[in-house]
Amino acid sequence: MYGLEKCKLCARNCGVDREAGKVGVCGQTSELVVARAALHMWEEPCISGENGSGAVFFSGCNIGCVFCQNQNIAKGDVGKKISLERLVEIFFELEQKGANNINLVTPTHYVPLIVEAIHRAREKGFSLPFVYNTGCYENLETIQMLDGCIDIYLPDMKYKDSTMSMRYSHAKDYFTVASRALEEMVRQVGEPVIDEKTGIMKKGVIVRHLLLPGGLMDSKEVVAYLYQTYHNKIFLSLMNQYTPLPQVASFPEINRKVTRYEYNKLVNYAIELGVENGFIQEGNTAKESFIPEFDLEGV
Image (tube, rainbow, N blue to C red; front, top):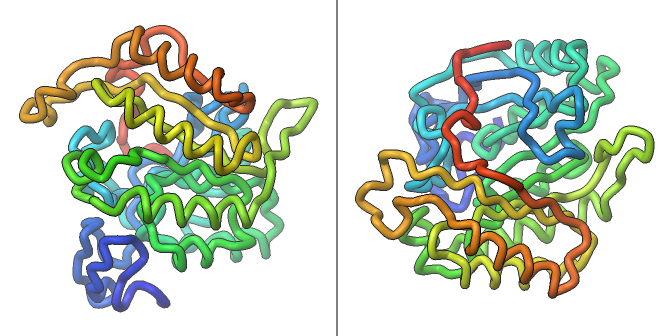
């Protein structure tokens, strides 16, 4: 299938033949591997709502952040191989459970397969919005493949500083790659559309930014870039949920939680800039309990 024979779906550009069973930087071949498919209540309110978002967690990841909160699926340690037909069935099963949308989590390395699954589902009358939930380290051509398939983009904008992106994600060019991908996402879906009765988003872009311990200066630069570039054409989700898991022990500067002071400074900065379309987190969200159980539910 196009894009998997000499895979360059993400900015790693590893070029391996995943169709022949070889493993890319993402850790996956061309076979679909899913770790969980269930109603998810922990997304932004306009995504989860009261019913939940129909989250499909794909195994593998092309970024490999050292602080990854979902490391067991990012490394591909958990997951079940499924067919395209089964993925389409999962979409309909989540719809029957009352999902507000289908939330494709860490999907970059499966884009050609996902596009085909969406087409097949829509041919059968499927009508829920599709959410593309990504770390945003993918090539422009990959996002262009999704034009007309995705209703809501939910990308990260992790860093602006290349030193940070290299240290924590081994991706010196992260900001250049992610900002180019984001521009295409906004071009495709335009300004946000929210259902007035339910408060659920039907179309638009929500950009997430996770504040790292000691990373306030770079976070401010990320927020400034997003607002100055898109103003209120996108929603901005500022997160304080960073959880220092055991794998960051060798990175002492981020081996702690974000302080309330750090987070409040970032939120106040966003407000001072003029950000109106945004989400913030309240209380203590840095808990491992916020990480789902990847037990193959719904797969």
